[in-house]
Image (cartoon, rainbow, N blue to C red; front, side, top):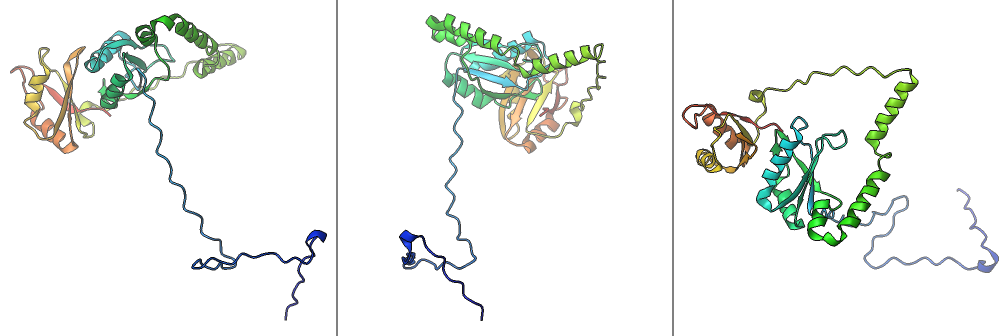
Length: 280
C-alpha cells in the first residue's frame, strides 16, 4: 500500500486548527476531482451604440472621374428633397478625392437622408455615408453665428497642426526624400490599363441603369412605364444628367423581367433606351 503523506505543518498561529470545508448546498452537484466546473453563463453583449447624428454627412466612395463642379451639383440635387442643403464640400486633391461633405440645417434631416440614400449608386458607385464628427462652417454660421469666428479659428489651428502629421502627405514626403537621397526622382510606375467590364455583361441585381433617355423625360413617365412590372420600389433621376436614371425593384428577379421587356424600348418613338444592371 502506498504511504500516505503527512499534512503540512501550519504556522504557529494556526497549528492544530483544521481548515473549514463548506458543506455543499442541498441539491447542488458534488464536485468531481479532476473536472473543471462549468463557467458561469456569459453576460449578454450590449448592442452597439447608435452613431451620433450631426447636421453634416460624410460621403465616401464617390466616382473620382467626375469633375468636382458636376459632382457637387449632383449631390446637392440628390439631397435637396430632404431639406435645405446649406453646403456641399468636395475637393480634387489627393487627400479628399472620392469624398464629400453635405450639410443640412438639422441633424434630423441628415439622419433621414443618410437612412434613405446610403448605398445609392451615384455615377455607378454606391455611396458610403456616415455622420461627420464636427460641425461644418456653414452649419455654425446658420445655427450659431455668434461663435462662428471662434469655430473657424479653431478649425484652422487644427488643420495647421495636422498638416505635417497627415499620413498620406507624410508618405509622399518620405518617398520624395528617398528619391532625393538616391540622386534623382524615382521613375514613375507604369500605369496599369483600366479594364472595365462592359455594361451588358454586368451580373444581375435589383437596380437597373437607364441610358439614352430623352432630355425631357420626367419621373412620372418612368414610373408609369415600370409600374407595369411587379415589385417596383423607386425611380431616381440625376438632375445634372437628364439622359440617365436608376430604377430599383424589391428583388433581382423582378428587375430582370423589366430589363428584358423594356431594353431598346422607344420611349419617345425615336431613340431606344439602353437598360443594363447597375454597377455595384
